[in-house]
Image (cartoon, rainbow, N blue to C red; front, side, top):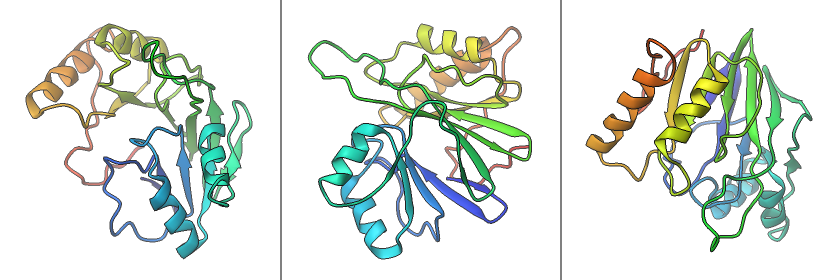
Length: 205
C-alpha cells in the first residue's frame, strides 16, 4: 500500500497478501499475472463492489478481460497519474525462472510524489528506472540468487534505503540472513533497510 495526501493505491494484491480491511482505494496496480502477485477473484470482486481503477501488465489484462473486467494496460515509458502519484511503468518481462515455466510479462512501477521516487520492480532485476530514493527489493524467489539481487541493488543505487518485498517463502531466520547481506553489501559501507514486516506504516521523505 502506498499513500500520499488523499491518494491510496495497492500494488500486487496476491495470494500472500493481507487483503482485509484495506479501506477506500484509488487504484490497484499489478506488475504481473502470477498468483502471488494478483488474486484475480479478489480483484474482480473488488471492482464489482467499488469500481476501483486497475492498472495492470498485459498478461494480467488478458486474464481480467476473460472475466469481462476492464483495466488500463501499463507499458514501459507510458507515464500516468493516480491522484497525487505520478507512475511510470518500467520493463516488460518477468525474470527467467527455468525452462519448464513459460515466461510472462512483468512491468515494474516507478512512483513519484513530492520529489520522492520509489521503484517497485515486480519480479525482474533488469529495469532501468533512473535515479530513485527507495528501492523495493525482491529478497527471495525461485528465480533469484542473492548475488544477482545485490548486483541489482548496487546498479540502481537508491539514495535512501531498500524496502524488502517478496519474502513469504522464508523463515524468520532465513529472512534475517537475506536482510543482513542486502543491508551490509547493497552499497559500499552498507545501505539502510526499511522493513515493513511489522505491519506499521512508514513515512518516506
